[in-house]
Image (cartoon, rainbow, N blue to C red):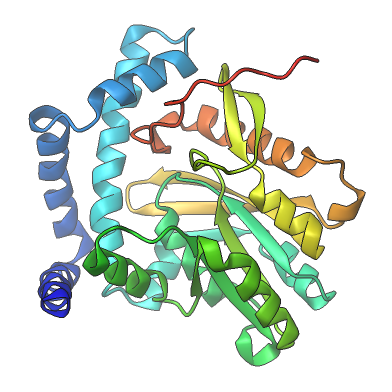
Length: 300
């Protein structure tokens, strides 16, 4: 039954993916109307998050961010489905990168790299970076992303297929350290993407920072791995120039994690992420109940 469910889901999504993006955006417009006006999916959470994070913005301004967010969310859905059938040429035209030579230089110098990114724009399209790098697995570099397995087996298999579209490797969160060590022992340099803006899970070590005008708990496991394994760290600053087009600028966080004080890498990431969100607030994932459990800043 699980295989039948996956097969049916894959056939339906694959059929949709065969449609041109222009037509899929018509579906996205309908999806926006359903999600925002009919289902009202997490509208209370979104509205409260935006209000608390932008207290000085006018009510009309916050309402505009809210509506634009739901439009972007609908675009994200159809664009992610499109990954099941999109040419490398079209992907390279729609998802552009800047300063990826930072990562190339680090791996050529013998560094493994951790990439901090976020739920901004269409984060799934970021896996197409593999088409732009100077070195691939044949040259000893493997590109990976860490993920949290979904409760639905069928959807989880679909997402793994989507995320491997351009040759990257997906690693389940709980297996991250073991897999990275295994690849290192096999002589591979790794470039591994971590979605580090998620709400920490129960038991995750955290660092509480002032972020978007709110005390916010950040996952520190990414930094812990970088410091423990000696990995360089970079940040992907994403923007959305226009519909169906995204741009990522790669920014160095550190090439020497051992020289950083505890918490420094996380603080640098949070500061850069805050700049990204303030510049384009509607492209961040406001449905994420980031502040469900209030925290307090540590005393100075």
